[in-house]
Image (cartoon, rainbow, N blue to C red; front, side, top):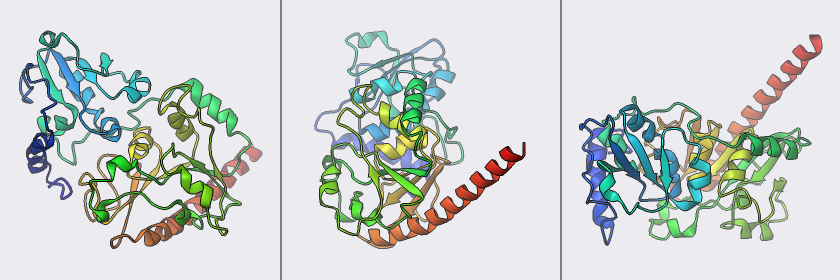
Length: 327
């Protein structure tokens, strides 16, 4: 139902997900908010129960709850604490359920918010950006990239294997990095790796005809300043992000960056079928496999789109330079 855009039915059916947990992870000693109770002056405990990409996608709904008058505590994954600490619509972030659960009036899972708020594809909050990035780090990365005058693309090609092991083969999201080799002219484009650990082993055995330059970073990337912090600041300085369906896709699009996402023939249901756009992110474009396991066609489609994108970017840049020189 979700992939078909039938949100009312989708959110209703999505509540069956709790049956998959060996033990219900919800703090059921607190009343569950039903979507109708008055939240003015109430203390609400929100929490995530799945991956970090899900948290980055669904944290936007805290704003809706804040606008209803609630004081919000939100439990998230520890690696996201630094990135989300500046999110203005949550009063307190925690990484574990607080001991004093009785202090809360209501609880609700972040991933149940669209159903509780009775949202449709047309009413999803899609104001971008809704994620924040450290301005000092943005300036630091701007300085690091200042010598690169080419069109700058962030690339993420691999998903954490732990998130793929239970998926059907036709739903697996990782793409061999070598398939990106010929999607752009290396004289006009620089690719920057947004890959951390998983998938980086592929860079040691690239084919001889691998044409483009892929900039990688030292082991302290996303560690010295906190998880995702360097990634977010780097993304802010790039022209385009090309990624598989992973947390980087939600980070980049949530930052308002133009983001192209490669999807398998049987994608996650949040990406509606038969379209290359999504109501979740106005800056996101979807590139879908035409048939199972066919990533070659997807990268070829990206190559065509990227050629047009770079040509348009180059023209706009020349026009800007011409106007500047005239002034």
